[in-house]
Length: 388
Image (tube, rainbow, N blue to C red; front, side):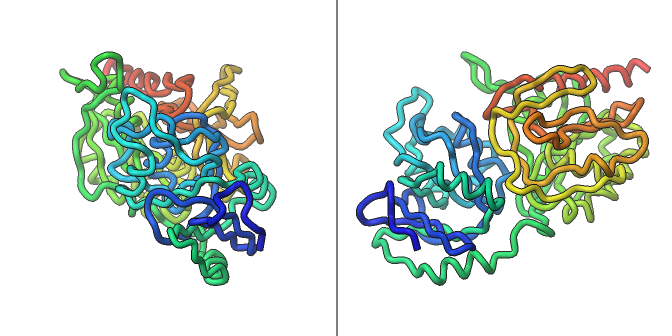
């Protein structure tokens, strides 16, 4: 086992990898143990939005940027009610917050939310390990007395089955339908509410981020959110002018067992349809394509994506460990976006119809807003359908 480095004299937390490697550090936030897949995120801001992104269910996030915790936390930045990521790993211990919006420090927020943090870790070395061997299974432990059963932790990491074949959308989805009208944050009012008539949109919640729903409201959508298990009949009963498929965690093939029949039923209604992240993968599966697990996925806010239909390059926010296999796209479905990091698929569209989806996150939060036009395109498709 490696000896502690870049950590306190007496480690109070450790990360045990399935290959037997152990990284030590100082624990903060909640105490205890958790087992998950380990990924790294390259974003320089937005750690709170990342930790509360439902797409991180079943994962521990290593932050490559060292200054995590400097801006504290505020309930306004939660992307869902509670953190979904299993834990976080950082290079430097979180400092006292220095931001006018902060209402609590990161350590207290994690403790209140029941999530483990580990600081003082050589995150560069850990990131290299993830890139070289793929996203490993890990056991994360925080014990103030510094006593760990390392053999047991490694055994737990090895015994964890991983995300392949795992449907997590049901676990993070809403349990009943609700209406959403909050719009994007803007200075100086903050969040405001949409009013007046709008486009009737049903958003299927596979683990939807709040900022996605805010973006829909901001382009004039009256949004009704339905659980992941909603049927085509339940979606169409709302008489929507458009249907949105949200982001989410887990293996798309597993979620597709119930999501694909619903989407195929909705496609027959010939409505504008827009999907993001897991929603993108669900649409691809419904159209006849396939998905596959990536080595370590894409997680960050600086990913270049090319719109092959226009030649435009966008800097995007991403968070996914599965990808659509471009070679399996059927006739009539075109690839619209590709990653300039590795050439993987980042967008599809049905030829001649307002049906499209992207792998990246045009709502950002955190990240750049280069791709916000996709929400405006969705609204324009519904406007055109009204006019027709």
